[in-house]
Image (cartoon, rainbow, N blue to C red; front, side, top):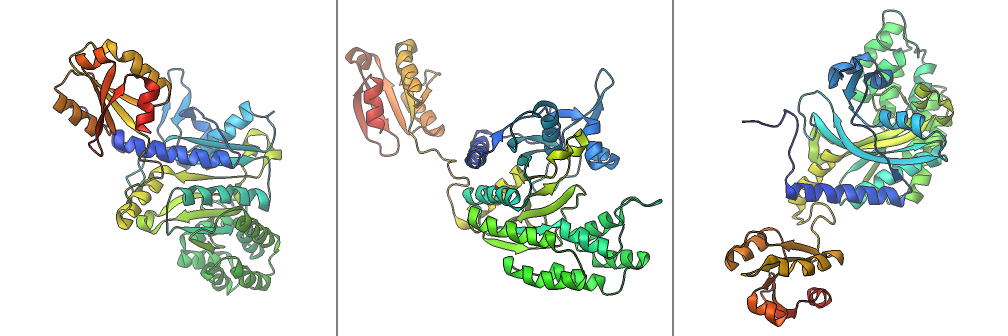
Length: 444
């Protein structure tokens, strides 16, 4: 018996209908904001990801050598491939580039809620424009997508790693990797801040001689709760540390633009200790969390980052974008639909347009095929009975596939040029001429 590989899934027809509805919804929202769809290969050069994330990432990858000895890997995420494609294929296109993408990614890791070894990611990148307005454009799209999906009770957390970098630099932390260290002191401190590991941060500061009270000040920053109004308190704290405030000014400007570009999210918090845990983020960072998923509640994240320099295109840095956990958002929507008693998990999932099942009964099916073609050519959903069953079984099949109407055409019907059209929801049945326009009029 063959089974699917560990960490992968099969999707049946009902699940795929939901997934397609969600993908189409996301793409429609991205298109409204001016983003255009691109696609990259499912495997890439291994060096692409070690250049972006370091050699330590290899243990999480499905890496291999091809028959030519080239080191390749199934892609673990989509941002780096998009950057590579821009550098290789889209250098001459008008800037800024507003790109959307969707596809499978692969990571060799143990199962977590909504995270599989083969998973799906939707994302966007804005390349060739920078600043608070560009950042607001990206966050506004993220808000629009989650709001349009019907998701409720989610939280948007926004910060700016530029503020943290300036603060930590002012405290004397180094941005360089010193001998015997695995990463720069600033990167270590930001990783500890992102996790809320205050003990680890206290030990780090003690080891490098940071002045007393620094951890307490960072705790104050991390403890700020609220939206734009918290920035005044943050400004007071940062002034005590004699930190340059330009990054805070940019964050405030971005939040003001966001309030004009997007609907208000259910919850918005300014969290100046959100660091996203990745070294290439340079400015605004944001995450979206859903309580239904517990500790694995982050469903979307992104921010402003520098990666184009890896391809010799420094002039396009910084960029801004986000990745949306397609599977996690669907899990959250399913949980909320059950909690709220909603019939539809994703808007548009259950199509309201009629579905007609045509049953040729004791006649040569070829007699009705021109009519079936004409109906399909006019954008109607038409199913054709292929198994020559008894009428009762044909009606049962029609109901099982979600047909709203059945049209039976028997020998006498064919002679008279009519068919028996039955509404499966009301039980009403009428005779209708075997004419596409008249059938569509009855269904309407």
